[in-house]
Amino acid sequence: MSNDTLLRTVRRYDRPPPAPPTVIGIDDWAWRRNHRYGTIICDLERRKTIALLPDREPPTARAWLVEQPQIEIVARDRGGGYAQAAAQALPHAEQVADRWHLMENASHAFLDAVRKSMRQVRIAIGTATVNPKLLTAAERLQYEGYLRREEANAVIRGLVSEGVSIKEIVRRTGHSRKLVRSVVRGQRTDIFRVRQTSLEPHLPWLEAQWDAGLRNGAELWRQLRLAGFGGGLRVVTEWATRRRRAEKAESGLGHTPAARTIVRLMTLERNYLTKAQTMTVAAIEERLPDLVEAKGCRRELPQNAAQ
Image (cartoon, rainbow, N blue to C red; front, top):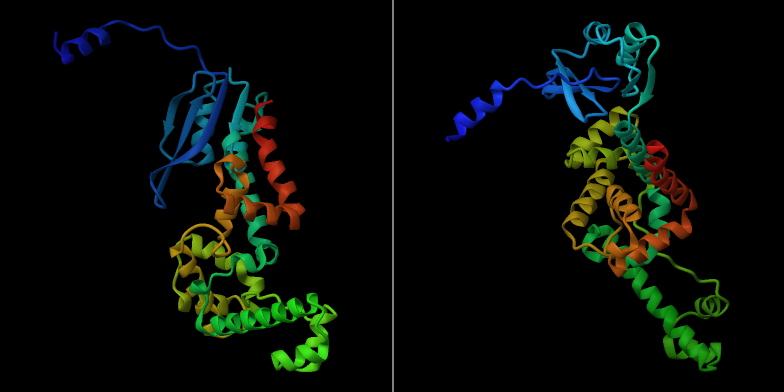
């Protein structure tokens, strides 16, 4: 028997119609993305699609729902169109937010929280994340100066630990007495940070645009100017250069990860992370307890939704 004959034989048998749905999910779907959308309706108990409507207008959804008076629960997105249609067609039915949209909203909220905390994240990770290959030319000069100062501080501290006097340290190292004294007293602290200056308030927007595919520094600057940014083009192009180099660099502690990467690392189980990634997450969680709390809320949501 051929495959076609087998299919014809199966189709001859009448199958009993399924029971009318009582718990449905309703959402929009794309006939053609960004151009034309329809409505998809699923039987959530049978896990099957039961209707595809030609558009996502409330009257169209209401016309279909009014013919299904047995429906008891409607799971929908948080938009008003389907809520209005369900309320008019099925006033007795209970409306609930569907699990997928709850999880999507929670994920977006956590990502936004991380983006708004990127300055604190950079501080938490500190100098362990500095990779000279990711710095611009001006920042590389600053970083080289920082390394020289750190080396000088280490030499002075080493001599102090050996019991050498300040006068002798000045003679051996050639540094000023004031500098040596400040190191001895613990008053000379120097932490290298990639400078952000006037760009810091706009970093969440920049990260979002970068993730969306806008990678041209000049275009980012033009859009920022329209939003009221008063800084120069160079500040934005240097930021874009750093982000571009960071994406090409190997993963690990060589650079400050992007916001999406931090979200992924913080939500993965620790046994799936490398040692370097674990150290990064630990540093962030120690410095930013609010992000730990936000992560906990996101993790608890699937359990609460299932209940």
